[in-house]
Length: 217
Ligand code: ADP
Ligand code: NI
Image (cartoon, rainbow, N blue to C red; front, side, top):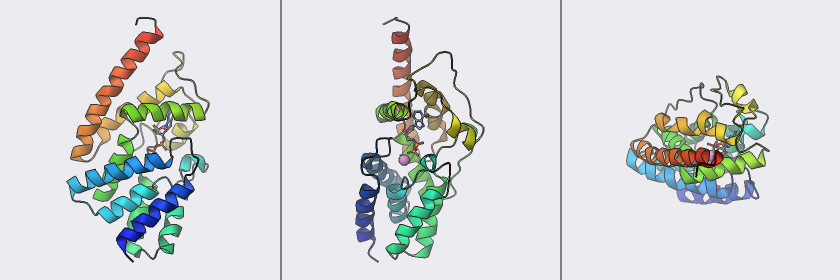
């Protein structure tokens, strides 16, 4: 097994799987997470083969679109990795990361046991905040039929993955329920630094949004 040819094959496979997605999990989301994961992984001296495979395959089958089934992603990734004759330890590591990656509500811990997992989780979370994060949030909200903002419907701090998944709140709520909380959950040095900048950008955006909402600007 040649590592570079497995990475190349993973790129081709995931482009194929995510073709036509408009829910915020298109190939270019994967591309950005992959690039960022390599950057963070180099800084942390992580195993870049594991980092790249987990980044490339992390949204192969999202639990939000599989009835909350958290095992759909790791199962799909395992099947594909086995078809590439990747060694068992790497498959276990990559699938472990994919199974634990996603955000599941303000009150739900999503600790990552390995350095490679922390790198990929930070990279994925960085793509949910800042200018791109704002764009993705409204794109997802539109895809899901959510309102932009509803002042009568305050944000909730979800205590379980189930409550988070079932919420029907407006997209502005999502900033308070997830996006603004990510800065303090970053686990790599560079991730923390970049998240702080992106966080500040979102706060400026929200201040402008609310000022315009009230006709102040
Ligand atoms: P990830 O790629 O980190 O697993 P998700 O699958 O949770 O991210 O979500 C994909 C994108 O859609 C992210 O940018 C996320 O913030 C956004 N999103 C998820 N849930 C909502 C929501 N309820 N309202 C608006 N945006 C959302
Ligand atoms: Ni993702």
